[in-house]
Image (cartoon, rainbow, N blue to C red):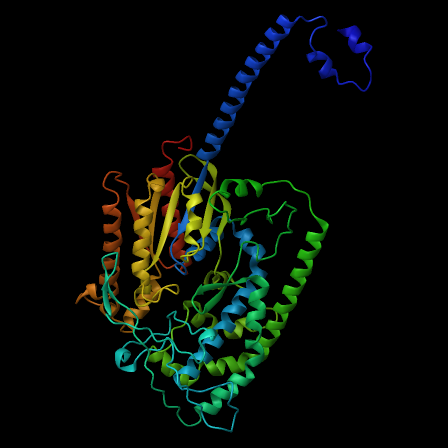
Length: 563
């Protein structure tokens, strides 16, 4: 053999010579050799597969895969940001400047909604009126999302979430309702939204010209809402006649794209996985590929980022120039009047950002942690965040994978690929939404929808061994509504004559969710951990997160190598 190697051609592969069949091998000897090689390969493959399975099992043991589930606007993304503030703050710090555009959209959208509500309430037509001339033009259509003064004379709050989309301007939104009370699938008896009052409000002297003037002066900043939204998101139909803007992972534009065959992958924490049911595992694996940069893709990405930044700078300048006008609108008695009568429902972040306008409407504005927590941003698909969490019992650090999902009805089927591998679920139910209805279905009470969704989670066989945590969320908003005199029994008639205070209302909802869990947990005896939460309360949320972390380590992972 040595002589053979010594005399071989330099282009020959030495390994080929070593495994070459012996010279003069007979057919019987060849058959015996091939059988032995096949047997050795089979044993080697079994060993390799066992090693692979052991490696996967060890990896599965040292990972926690946590799903955040719940309907749209339940607080999932806010909780995700709270986790990152605790365990991966550097990732949020890197995104901080990108959140300017989201805060700006929230502000401009709030101004638009307020103006549209005033136009409907007082039957003004901002498109045909000019300051100092003409008379108010009454709309012949009923005004959408308005409430009857007689129904709500004692119910006042400025922290609600119905909106008047621009697509409905001049059209109204009358909801036919033959039977206002229906027994819901969850067991609640709730009332459906009623048809709006069609009569026009009276415009006090001077208000019309003031509002028209403000509307004209705010036209430049209002025109930037759609431009800015399209730079970071995609328009999606959420209900008949209504569109909204959603974002996908990577909207921040922090990481350069890597070349892939047909999908855009983003490296690092916060990468997107939005598969179909058959593509879930394959797409998750593709995110870790080592594809090289594609020059044209990178150049296109850089150009898009420059365009986005130019739009953000323009909006910042317009906000600074419009600050006094926005303040005047926010403090106008016409707005205070419809807020007091609950004839306008603003998103929960609107009051915060409008109250912080003087800090935000400056050229060098940088979002604070509180700004990023409160900024409302609708996401599509499933977004993964990774961070390390230390366990005091073992003294080790483990990787957590947190999956933030879109909560609208159209997004919920995309949760399923993540059920099988989940260790834990935090389900968020906004109990403050007892007087609100789904965007996708104006007859479905939001709390009732949360109960139905929680029932599906509790009864799903794929989740029978998953650690389950329930957050009855937005308790801060619930307290404000109850203090303002909003009656729960008006929207959920099964509440009856129970006291309309926070303690009794929260206990009532808590009991309903626990009952759902008990009915679907007879054999499993799985414990449900319940917390009353407000995701914008950082101090309290951190304490709850630590409690949830300890419970997950103790209960779900106690039989693994982690404990």
